[in-house]
Image (cartoon, rainbow, N blue to C red; front, side, top):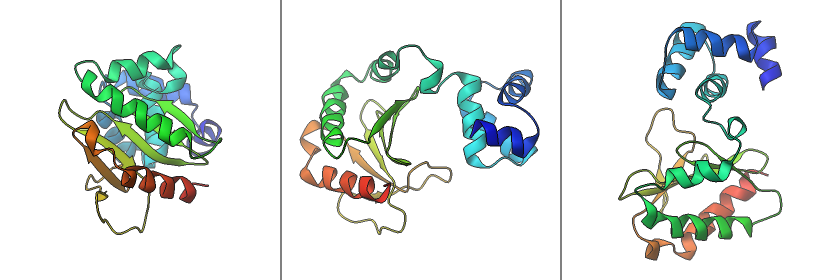
Length: 177
């Protein structure tokens, strides 16, 4: 993607990071809006530059475990949910990559199929990519305009980790292969 950024825009990733820094943009959403609105970026390229400029991607940190642990500060009661989901997801296949960001963990196969997000102190969200799937059961349609997943599952308590949760994640895993 970094190579294509140079090909498509004529500027390197470092050039774009410098442009963003000159604008003094501090928030991910602000950077996305600037790059998409002022420079015609697609969401993917804008997201790449935003993460690199803010150093919020897994590649910009030396210890990705710290990124994940920081997500749960003040939300420690969600840590067992994260650990159980991670273990269950790892059992789906050997080709899974967990890519921690500042606020969530992206889960990829050939492409992202899920996200684990300790959203608030009372809500844990599992983003699920199942384009074309009608919402049913615990699977809700994602309503955010710039969402990185098509659906979500909201968990408030560890007891809500039913077999249905892993069934949806398994379906998304297979769709991403």
